[in-house]
Image (cartoon, rainbow, N blue to C red; front, side, top):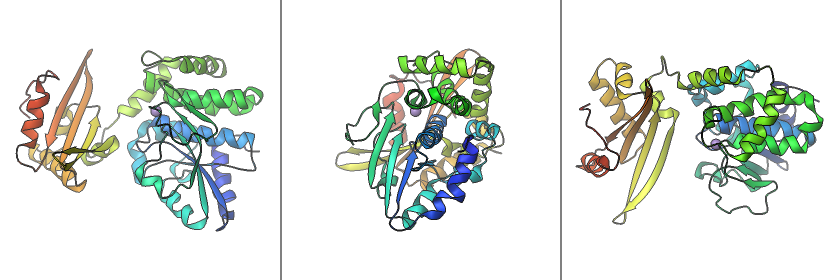
Length: 339
Ligand SMILES: [Mn+2]
């Protein structure tokens, strides 16, 4: 029996996945397509704990992004490397699609979301389990477990579920699972200060006994600075790091909007480019490359102790940008920064 997440991932790649045949049922677990720390921690810990309980039926943890996007998430990369887990040991969208061609059926457990997203729909035959903290879409009601509850972090629900199922009796597998799960909760609740719900506190009680040697405040500031560390990254990549798309319908016309959220100011982002023109060009390139009608860049950062936000709207359609800014200006109390 493997005792580290690393050796579990090696077993999957070198043994379990080599045995796939067209009649196999592949079992996977994956998080939402933003693939933040919470999604990745929930995915890995769920698969690992499930294997401890039922080694005959392993679940493959899939990180729901292309492999090339992992390095943009420095909080995840650095935390995993502290557990000796390197990128080559992980499974991404590419592998997910590849395995689908090798086996007959894919059964999935969803963590950190409760509805299969468009891009994964054709890969998944059945949803067999759900643990999530988003709004319940009331789908897959037969899934087991099916836990959808409001919490700061999905990892708290995953941890509590497995703690009660097996971890209680297997202290040797605790530590890595607790480190990742608590890491997600620290980031999602700003060290248990905001959005904290009862399941987060229940998990925290276990973390404190398992990780009694860990300075929580220090661990949190490490994770936070890793997450906010965009140094040396190209703005093009920064726009990809936390990107979501929405489609709205107005006057029977579909409008596709892409929103990139960044934890730095426009001024900081501008300095990453040689000139203002170059920065503007990157924004326009992103809008064109993503084929969206409107590209919105939202920044949010801490200036001394003051929380600040900016919004930048790019659209090739006449008057769109001005109209949007004019509409939201008073509601959001916007000031023009003339950038
Ligand atoms: Mn989450």
